[in-house]
Length: 401
Image (cartoon, rainbow, N blue to C red; front, side):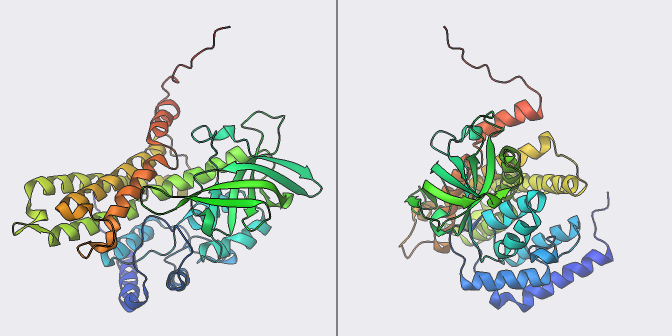
């Protein structure tokens, strides 16, 4: 097997390296898995520069504000490798660029694509996802937030919960029940809702990270044009699952995992106990090598899934594994980093002994939440077994009459 790159791709790698070296002073600090607030001016400027040079929004058509390149698996791999090697930001990530934009490309009207994709990939419009409700988390099809027709508008009433970045967002893409007489899967629509609309009340929820990434959102007589429905009325379940697929790809990004792994290796080369570097400890090095093997396996699995998508093929059971495994490995990387720091690993913020601005402690808690978010690990295992492997469904309790 020949794993070397052709001259064309090695030339492209040199282009990427040259760009990174030339613009190192313009890059913002590397962030976490996704944006959890309003992007800074530095990040907005960096994102524009990345798009202009084809390192972000690379395959999004130019008419919608992207770079417009044809899909190329190896160039994507090279970009990931070189940005990780340099330890530099890949630009904006989150619910707008990584979840809504590909959904609109697949299901949106031309007006919606031209109106929303450009500001979303450039950070001008921040989005949140209105899916989960107090009674509809794992059973997403049980959404009870309702929309009633009133002329050319919908009037929406209901509640959403665990709504990441809602307190910073300009827009929400939401799953709403518009066809009350239809079955629970067929009665849903996917609607774009401006967050400044009268009747929307956002209440932040503090998480175990110490920050408020999540929110409760209450909608009372919220008026939204029916033209804001993506696709057709009643197609919300299908469209929402498209978004969920992209969400799981984002949360399980092998490029993000490789970046975290490189950061862990650098930490282990610096941290010492009794004059011995952490990376020279047989116990810690063994844990590192196990994680490295899993990250490499997920990287090649991700390439396999990307190849299938480029060919228009369905990933089947293999595509269901990525989110489950990726989020677990991310948490394990952060756990090893905390162990490497010893007693300093318990410091969270405000201490002069804190390492890397508390990044590893935050990532430990944040990635633990991602094992639950976007479909819990338990639900993912059920989906893999039932839909992917064809195993029988778990028996349901029957109410005696």
